[in-house]
Length: 264
Image (cartoon, rainbow, N blue to C red; front, side):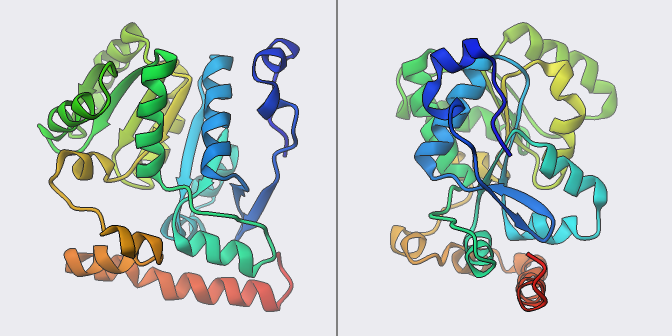
């Protein structure tokens, strides 16, 4: 698959547009073979293009859920950019013969884009988590990235009746990036449904990132992240995740079955 852009786009964002973007097929779900730096370059290109776009940080749980949902697979495969979020995706891609060089997690992408936003003069909007969380996260981000323009926030406890006013507010504020923290796959489905109405160049699902940024949940220590044990830390910190993480051995089984049956 190639990144499609106009001649005008190519002049402004030559490095990303002029190259073919390679991708992997993991159990019928596409993931772009991008490093973190390449993902940032790609999102810059998307924002510069100015058209509504959907960015997914793909993990093993979402891919597993997509095996039972054609709609979810179609949402994933129609996204404008998909990063390999999670060691499960990295392992699976490599096992199937794809050159996935590193993880590009949602929260790391979040922080990097906030840093870039202060340089590029982008506005961001925070949507999701429990009431009050986005406000605390906004204060933390503003303190960490002086000059960051957080043009709006909204919690994730809204109804369908709230949508017209919320969409209109986001359209009026004209952010370049909309961070959506509704949990996967709800956030992916929500972005797909409202992306065109919102008109935001970069809509990104970021799971529980607002809770971490606000300090309500802790990220794994650096050494655990380095050794790809972040999943273990989350399980130990939140034993209630045990049932969710039972999908991981099932995901491994599907990858091995795919590999040894030659269905890559």
